[in-house]
Amino acid sequence: MHLEVRRVEERDLEVVADMIARLKVLNEELDPHFRVVEDLEEQARRYVKESLRNENVVMLVAYDSDAGEAAGVIRVEIVDRVFYKPRLKAVITDIYVKPKYRRRRVAATLLEKAKEEAKRRGAGIITAVYPANNVIAEMFYEKEGFKTLQVEKYLPL
Amino acid sequence: MYEPGVTIRRATQADVESLAKLIARFYLFNEEFDPAMEAASDIKEKALEVARARVEGSDLLLVATYEGRVIGYVYGVVAENPLLARRKIGVLRELYVIPEERGRGVATMLIEYAMRELSAKGVHYVAVEFPARNIVAKKFYEKLGFREYTSIYLKEV
Image (tube, rainbow over all chains, first blue to last red; front, top):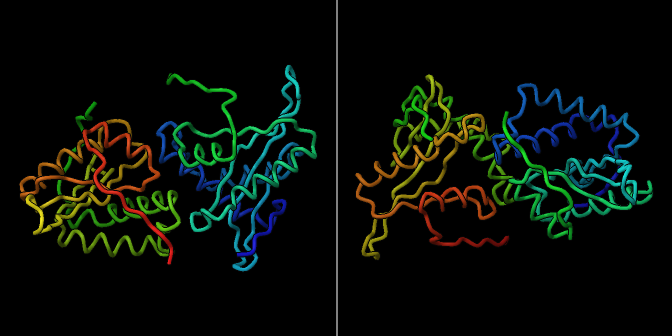
């Protein structure tokens, strides 16, 4: 496997949208509060398209050039914290590695590249948002040294 | 917590197609936990074949239905070891409830029904298999009184 990490481009739309959709389905499996919409694939494509246009979003794809196939994706949003220093934080909103590429440090590589890009853009902190029940994400970030910064509570209405 | 409209019964020929969909979803979910569980590329067709064969004859194959729709299933086998004092054990190999119907006790109903069916087949214990990393499943079965029994370790050759 030869891994190449690069910016997501228009030509990656389908494959990236597919990985984003799979991430949402995984979240749905782990917690009924993340029930996906009926037109998930369409929404995922829209999300990727909008992300491509948004200058505060960094989207990177890990590409296995031997197999000619995308292995994983990371999406990071640069957010101005306004009240706090450092003002700019990079938020990992989505990260997904195809099952067959797991356990080969694909996510870690994506994270490293995303950190570099976030730093380059002036972010002083990087965070990740994921469902509390997503144990796969939980284990990954713990291994990467992330600590809890904020919590999100909910109450069904 | 049990939903009154939910019925548990043995799977029949008429359930093959809806059952196949759930089997495919079960495998696509499980592959998220370990690359060794990567689903076949034609999982949907394979699931249909498997569903057909299983309906023909299985030690245990139950479906949960709600308003006539199949919303979950459990598949199990009876394993026998003549070297053990209590040689028959029921093994729940697969259990799946569609995300939108979670949280209302459907899985619990499936398991309770499965325990009764297996008990009638003369098993002394019922075991359940799930990926080591599926913490949600682990918590769920522990809540139902299951305890850790065997561990399966894996290494690539």
